[in-house]
Amino acid sequence: MEKTYTVQEAKARLEAYCAYQERCHREVVAKLRAMGMIPLAIDDIVVHLIHYGFLNEERYARSFTRGKFYNKKWGKLRIQRELKARGLTDYNIEAGLSEITDEDYYDTLNLLAEKKQATIKEKNPYKAKAKLANFLLYRGFEPELVYEIVDELYDE
Image (cartoon, rainbow, N blue to C red; front, side):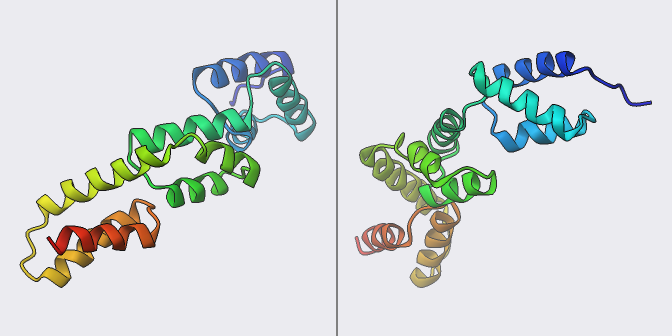
């Protein structure tokens, strides 16, 4: 039989859940549903978490962006898509993306492109360029930046 939780127990569990790592509203609601909480209790707990600073979507967006950009080397488009999929507002997404400086962004794009180029064994320059471009586009970098850097790297 599945364990049932009182609202107080659920609040305590979710406080720990949110304190461990930044969470978005959607993750918290999904967790509460999985715990078998009714909608009225879910609303009460979410309001409690927001009021006491355990849940903050702007802070989540900023943290998510820093992590995905600096650790996983994702571009702005992919980060934006992921945040949108998590139900964040455009305002919070913009706040998150403001965590990335233009200088860091271009440096990371250059570094990724150069590293990937070194691993491409393709002899046909057109296929090699396409492989590099596809890799960078998949990572979520803007097409105009990707094609500019690919052209620079292959026209040397």
